[in-house]
Length: 428
Image (cartoon, rainbow, N blue to C red; front, side, top):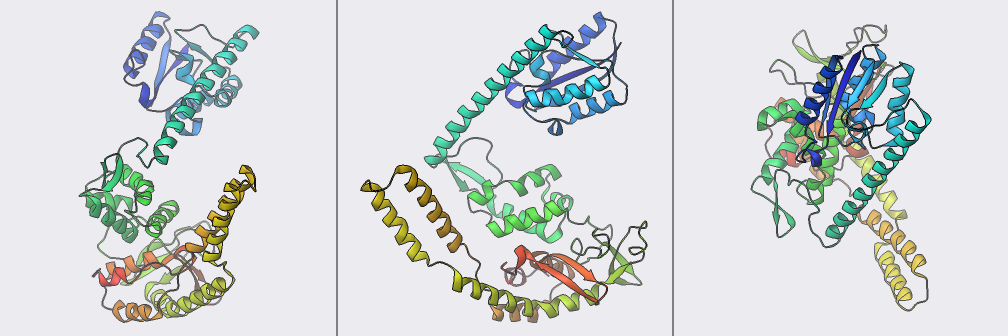
């Protein structure tokens, strides 16, 4: 009998007696030896909740792949809750097992699937386990929400650049380092390069970039945070192995297949080409960097003027913020005088607050004088400075072979970022 031994422990359970990975593994090994089973492999999910879906449990995924490859006859775990506490995910696994004639056993419990009674008992235990997990989650969320209402930090580790002062977040001595880290990632579009410069792991950099604590505390502004995560989501181009800097790397896509163009040296000149060879239109397609740079510079001022005009038109149609606030105050007076129901008040108050937030957060026009300053200083930037500049202004460049020009997609759909900052700070 070929047996796969599965172990799992969540972060909260690691310190509890009898639930450690070592304890599970020892019990399973002894059980397999007593039954003279052949152990195919140990599948160990560390620090993962039993409520997590299969897609979030890498070792369980690997086990199921081995099941489908016909390598396993039986799966063993110490207790059913090591396997899952989620009924839906349990049946997803069970479908795979049954399709491949594989069974499972919990070596310290008496559950199974061979009879109707065993299946009923298994369903009952899973339902109770899931309900217990749900109730625990609700209690924790209620505690966290109460702390948030009182302006306190809910729980969890404090990230780099942040410290706790009387239960509240505050910038630490490392705060400037975090700001510099975000800037470095945006400028290089490379998690690996950012990790190298700051002496951190790539996983650590990835976690920091998506940590909303920096956004909530105001350490990182919303625009920088969103830009960094948009770059991360679209996967910036890998750093080149040479010292040559390609100022549009990670931004230019193939007009035929949509893949990002690779940086290339074409007879001593920077260029971008498509590496796909299975498509006749893509093969050999490349763009000269100087041509692209001239086009982007020529479009910067016209794009700013077009953007400012769109904002002006939008503001003409935008609601008056002071009128909205007055309406909100009047609504509160009506509620205090018992002239409207609590439900109606809550519904209308929320709608007015959302309208005020939307009106107050509307984009502001970009100064054309500042753009002129940028353009006059542009030639004095190093290639690294130019790359940092375009990384903050553009999100994508799509060549148009039929016309010989390009479609430029600006940051957040416009040029609202503080681009002067990256010229005046001397990125040279």
